[in-house]
Length: 302
Ligand SMILES: *Cc1c(COP(=O)(O)O)cnc(C)c1O
Image 1 (spheres, rainbow, N blue to C red):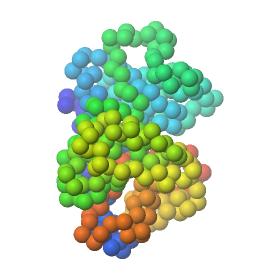
Image 2 (image 1 turned 90 degrees about the vertical axis):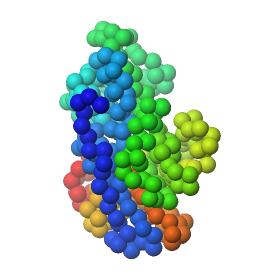
Image 3 (image 1 turned 90 degrees about the horizontal axis):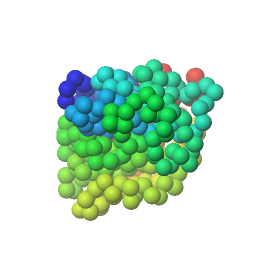
């Protein structure tokens, strides 16, 4: 790819000793890809960015909520590539913008607010065309969901020797990351997704839609580690994050990665894995969410 350089090969950290796990457990530190276009977001975006550059489009346009890591990552990736960016944001313009929206604006993203009904239609509001031509725009679907997002995610395992593991666990929002990992996985490998939403039962079909039927059995979804729903948390989860940090120096966020780690640890406790298995937890990055916590809640800075 043209000018963007990211460290796509990321460190792998063993946490087997730290927690005295009965099976080998490694963490793939995608949080070290880039400080802002963190973790899985870079991989999901890369082929959309490439498409924009190749087709001489000068603007990335995407959709997200006020707390979306995807919005920030798209704004930063566009700015690093000297592209303009437009964010279509769900809901009314807040009186004080969230940290994510502030950061997106810092990277030059133009923000347009649409009602929840309008947002569901994923149409581009007319105001957008006051500032740019339709032909200049490359649309990135919400969360990077789609074949291009999946193609980018596949490279996570290719570049990081994912073949050594029997099971790979990741947090799941749109499922694009889970689908990409599943597509890249070898025959017997199992990909386990921890949904961060409460009762998001359409997820299964949304992920299947990104995969050939031969891969539909290669992944499974866990729906019991959402801690009350999207961006919800409690003292148990926050204590867990502090414990992980104390024992491993790994920082997690309460929206995504802490729930994936918690789910993985719980499966280990329940003897879900056999001694010959080898587990890889994908640290998908994105600590921005922690900024909404009261300071002092976590023992590490984000
Ligand atoms: C966006 C995000 C996810 C979810 O990825 P999907 O591909 O939408 O499932 C997981 N972890 C982190 C840290 C994220 O920012």
